[in-house]
Length: 168
Image (tube, rainbow, N blue to C red; front, side, top):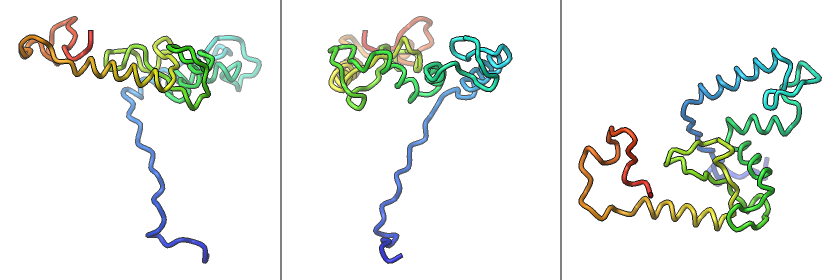
């Protein structure tokens, strides 16, 4: 006990920020319904291949990762990096996992799906930083004309209109 530091010297343990997930009940309900249907059929949840055991839900670890990636960012990130062979999709440099990031092709702010594999790509940090700064620079650009009227600005109810702060 003599080697323990007093409470005031100990650093507080880092607290992970709470993840905010919109409509998480619907995501988990969908996942549970798919699992129940697959179990009744005796097939893999992801690829619908026949299963050898009624206790298993997946035919392989790959199918397990793919299914979890539809609901959890960490799993989706692993699946996309493996799919892209740990290669940046812009500069085509092959890198280690810790040097890569997974990016949304169509940003979520523009309405892109969050966990759709077709909307995710692997980028190196430099390419991701450049893409993000271009997107943010386009959002900050002010229109050349007069200020938008309340009926045409962000939050307007016009059908099919895109808010002016999105880059073209």
